[in-house]
Length: 366
Image (cartoon, rainbow, N blue to C red):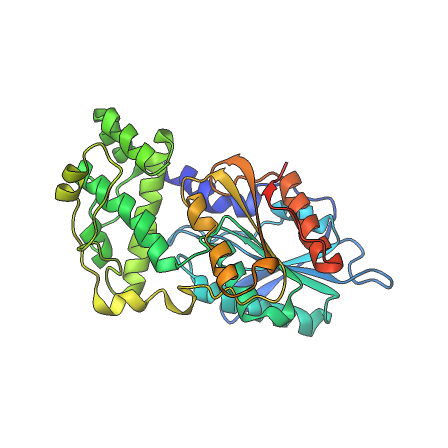
């Protein structure tokens, strides 16, 4: 179960697309403890050829898992367009939005120093990498012509995680007692309950499991994997923060067949005061953008609900930058489930927007 889930949640960004025949050479190395990889298409930088750069931010990598190999296979749609693709593995595994922003910028600076200033530079990423993409375009707008975040949390990070990830865990723990060890996960004395154990619990009361899945718009078959992965993230964030950063002591949960039962039985966990500030400077996006941002999400995402991904629209509007933000969707059935053709299509739209000022029409990516 675990190896399958690791591929599903992180491996997508490494191996999902076939190896590109456009790839000509690769530059690898380490910057301040963070491994990097730069893939170049054929003829990049030669006389008369454009020098285009795409900075890529990968998603969450489970702590203790073998470090990703930064495979070049998924880059085909970008290499095909003549872009060099640069990506950092970050200094740390796990929750690494802060490190991801800083290490991506360090790699961009390294690229410019070694290969010269590109003619154009864009930034993209999936999942947590999509958050890093948004934070990067807000913090370093002068370096980019546009941003293409895929399937990120784009609103208030603390509120989003508490509203969905934490709520999923505590309400499940209330309905299926003695399955998860949330308090021990937070203090580092337990490991996540394996997905197979969760699956057996659900099979013993499938009606309650199906009702629970509908409440959170998660497919029933996806629940074991989602709950295992959410435990991993909760444990990681809590241990980095020095304790549980979330608090549901004053919250009520609704939308279940028996809300009173859920609220009686869900564990009430208080946040450690020092832990609530852990999520740091990128807890809230500002909407202060000066280059086009095209965000793409799927209609079904078992990890990040559509409303969490599309929250940036209100943020950009409040900042007066709604004309620089467009959201598009696909009918993908899973977290970051985009095809190479869809990726290429939205990248073309972003580039055309940046170059010619033709703002894409919001809606479905065919």
